[in-house]
Image 1 (cartoon, one colour):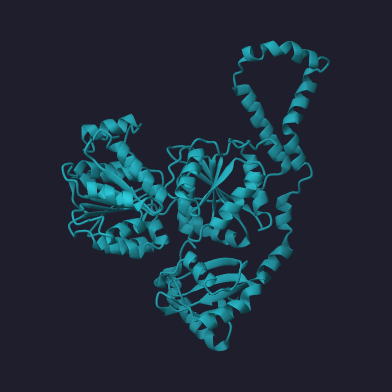
Image 2 (cartoon, rainbow, N blue to C red):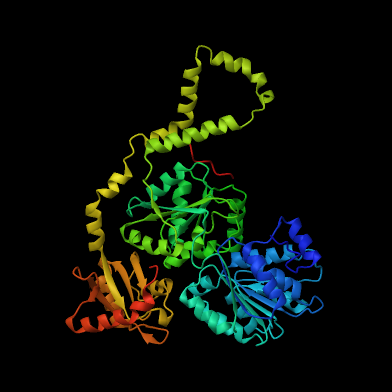
Length: 577
């Protein structure tokens, strides 16, 4: 294996890398750094989360920029504040021995006036989110006319978050002679398209297979119903006393709700989502990195770019809207050669999607049985005994109390003492699981709830799709903008090229039809039209109501068929204050 010096990096950078624990290049670094250093070509690079992409693009940039020039020579775009901050900190660490390098990280929620003042003093590398970067460009505070490098990091996530228009606008401010570097953990069709638009004859570099999972991660799923989803989550956490991981939720509301429930039930947990201020997010992450909390309950956006070592578990409270994003979630664990577990809580509809995820991962997702109360108590007891055996005890601190302790315990034999101390330690957990039902039986026998689930949701067709740049979040926003009232539940969303389907609480069926007819909403210049659909039991296809529309629906399905076929108390630590 080559050293960083053999890749072409100067001594100052190599010394800095050594001081922060970088011993040898990762595969993506070994392949990418020499290409960027030796050639002025555009690069399209794939590497899974946690494989060192930041160093792969930032180290050659640090090697090639002109330290005597205080104009912006590199702009690095990332989808989230957390990732931008992490990249900025990494570059500062890599350049600690390069006194003249100036790096500025820009993102929403921070003081823009201070950023403008820093830009006026001179900056060579700007790391930022697309929104804040474009804002600074429009204010003419940021100038990219001298830019030599443009980096799009986590390009797939920037597209998922709707930054395509911002990226288009930013790139127009940069010179044609720049070197463009695109890095992504997955390469769906949309990323391939953006690569063809932004990059000129790029070389493609891959460390591992595209759109696959990490080999060090074991994938499991538990069958749940909506009523049992939170109960199963608690049992999984109780089954792993040393759990240190992230629980992913789909919405900010769910994230806060689940975190509040876990905290109330005595677990070491906290929430991370977009409704928190930057100072609140920093405080949560500080506690999580310091292991003062075991479980971080987070949305995909908030957790993007988190650089936390040694996570044991990733738990998917619900699957992401775009199933390709599952690889991002699971890639948070099993890093740096260590093993990890990615767990999915899946209801009947979500179980159907698992085959598609397996095709992406090229790994099986094994079904696991929900642990019984007895299994959990046994696991927790063994964990306690392991800690007792492993921990060394400083007896000098208790020696003075021993005579009184022996006096109080006189008459108890060894077996009785063990029973009493274990029972005392386990009292809360034993009581909680004493008469607990077998959730596996509840789920398998819950035929009534399945029938009710079908009855309680109405499936709609809408004439908008990916070609209209429709995303699940934007579709939900379009629905909510029609003023259909509070408490509406939006179920499964399927987005295709030129049309989409979504489910909504049956109580709101007539209301949403009337709202769309009255408001006549449009999306990106197209009038939005919705219709109720129903499943055709004979063909498995979905029909729209009305004989005259039947043919046109089939036409939609036929035209989209190829492009859309895709991998569719014990055990609870007290919170530290």
